[in-house]
Image (tube, rainbow, N blue to C red):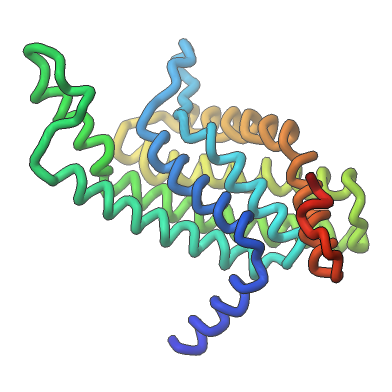
Length: 241
């Protein structure tokens, strides 16, 4: 156990604080916003607002993989997941502290609204478990697939290579994340059909990929800044600004 923690600490020490911070922020944000569904108007298509943060989690992993390798990126992802679970515990405690939420002051509906907000922040065990498993599996897949593509491209550091690595690994890993969660949670506990699970996984992966396409130039500039700093540049991330 001591050796494992020592190895984890060694891997994390490589990761730039900005990337680790974004990874943790994304993990917490997408877990909380996953409580709100998106009304698509289509019975076979189901999405949730966690999509607004999930792209950031994978972009952070892509930058970490590009700069430090898949093992360090996966270590970062697992630590982000662990810290998210800590936040889940904090939210759970907050939800069970006697008191009322500011938004519950609606005449005649105070108790119902307050209970709904407590349940939202308190979380549901099977949703938390399912999302944690899906995130851990998809993170490892994303990082090692991204690295494997980079190996075949002989470590070319151009934007085109960064984009190709990121887009392929993101789509595959996001689909995996979505389908694992849908099969473990949505199909088991909410009665989704297999069609809904698959369409949700594909559509979610496509939308999350579009986010990544839009923000990947920023991720590439950040990775260039990190690599420049690691190579002895005095400006570091400032060169990526």
